[in-house]
Amino acid sequence: MTLFLALVRQTIRAAFGQGGGAFTGLLFYFSVVATLPFAIGPDPATLSRIAPAMLWLGALLATLFGLDRLFQDDRDDGGLDLLVLSGLPLSLVVLAKSLGHLVATGVPLLLGAPLFGLMLGLDAGAIGWNVAALALGLPALTFIGAIGAALMVPLRRGGLLVAVLILPFTVPVLIFGVAAAGAETSQPMLLLSALSLAATVLGPAAGAAALAAALD
Amino acid sequence: MAVATLANPTRFSALAGRLLPFVLAAALITLAVGLYLSLFVAPADYQQGETVRIMFIHVPAAWLSMFGYGLMAVAALGTLVWRHPLADVAAKATAPIGAAFTFIALATGSLWGKPMWGTWWQWDARLTSVLVLFLMYLGLIALWRAVEDPARAARAAAVLILVGSVNLPIIKFSVDWWWTLHQPASVFRMGGPTIHPSLLVPLLVMAGGATLLFLALVLIGMRNELMRRRIRALGLRAAAAR
Image 1 (cartoon, each protein chain N blue to C red):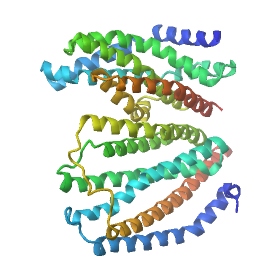
Image 2 (cartoon, rainbow over the protein chains, first blue to last red):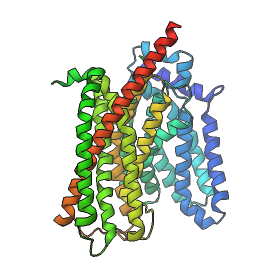
Image 3 (spheres, each protein chain N blue to C red):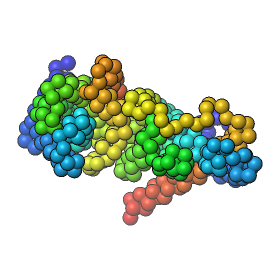
Image 4 (tube, helix red, strand yellow):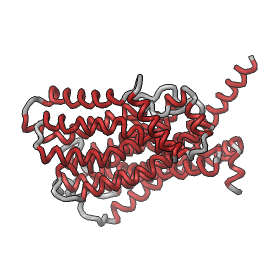
């Protein structure tokens, strides 16, 4: 357990430290949200109608693009081999690394989202729902993305491939996430939580299988 | 003959080579009969006219797009659980063929959609699910190409295939939910669930023929992949000897 928590802490510290990408993710999110109005036009009615979609797409891309190095840095400096030898089950290694990533990149995204929602013309209530939906959905995105990150370990570069592999799997999260932000019923919110819970189980298990395949 | 004896790639190649002409001939004969039935014998639909004949290509292709993924999922289990040496060869050979059949289903659906719904593409629940399936096939092919060592690529791809087989029903469900939420049933009514025998018989013959063709192509793909690997191994050995 101490090892697990230490790994979470180390991942967070690495993300905020030198060369880490935690704030780059937030900046990327901001850039996506700030660029889209130039493509769509400045009409406030249109922008506030598609605001939940933009908030979700930006968060999805920011999460995925930050993920491809999740295990590759550890592979490059030999840390991954040490983690394998540490006795911590591989699925817990994946879980700890993903949790660290979730805290380091997900939380900044959640802090930025209300501001971006405001800029897109959402009212206070809608912003609250959107941020709540994002908070419930980001674990699903991160844990599904961790599978892709683990698959990138035998590759020299991951880059776009991780997004290509993982984006189809995020379709349900996107659907229920956007729906949860605008729905009158709790059903999409519950389904979104279910997806996050399922991904918490499936992601580390599949990620561990991918790591094992890459390392032996 | 047990499956285990087929694990030897040489023996498998030999057996596949012997089977192939029969499977291929059966596929071509069945498809020829099926095409004759569907193009000349089956009546035109009273509402859709001659365009209903697109169905005889479209529906088998759509079935096989899912059959292909099922085949890959079984092969992925074979790779991860039993480490069967041919399982990955089968999965890797199936992927482009499955992708091709998925593409045929999408393309013929588009051709059918233009006269029937008045549009080439509609974000209909079923179309969208098939599109996601197509993307997953392409992603898998990209993964196989990206990892250099075949053994590692095999297990990485197997993990992704199995994750996909868990996710596909969820994606299907969510897309159905999304579509019923956003769109009232306005476009697509396919004359009810029952289909007249005069159309059903050609459809089943075509489905049988297309399945045989699919299997024949997988066998050919597997033999090619085995040869490709042998060439790679010989090249490595030659490089090491130098």
